[in-house]
Length: 228
Image: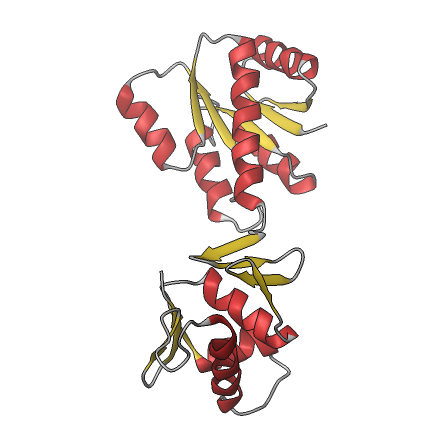
């Protein structure tokens, strides 16, 4: 079950939310202030946090800032729970990193629905991209397969990895050194001309006209860019 932390200085609200979450299939833990919440997150990272704005220091906004400032916790979905319903307060909470904003009094069913919605958005954002497309060129990363005009294209492992790296960064210029590092790995000590050779072979397989490439462009003196 997804684990949701509830931080609020009002015991009745914590119990109400915990009961509603349990009824909706969530596991939960309660915290009366920001300090104990942060300690709890350090001990066990939750799937989401319901955070009261007006808790004793550190208040909800301060906790939100702390969570968003750390690489270990910045991806935790945060739902801000507060009696402050003015638009400026909502904007402030969202700009500081809250994923949703719920004003007291609230309906417990709506709260649980919002928790589910935030978790779905987070799961979609964290899913690795499995299919890449550029016109008739399609790359299925999970199946390690490339097709163009519905015809399968045979690529070597490095050609495939190079194509995926370029397509995932489409529109960005990738230097030869960065491509060596990301595709061949830091243990590779070869010449950057290795990249040029693989790009040439790759163009012959995926471009309509390898002599005038429309997909993989050369940025003179820098590297390569996959067109947007």
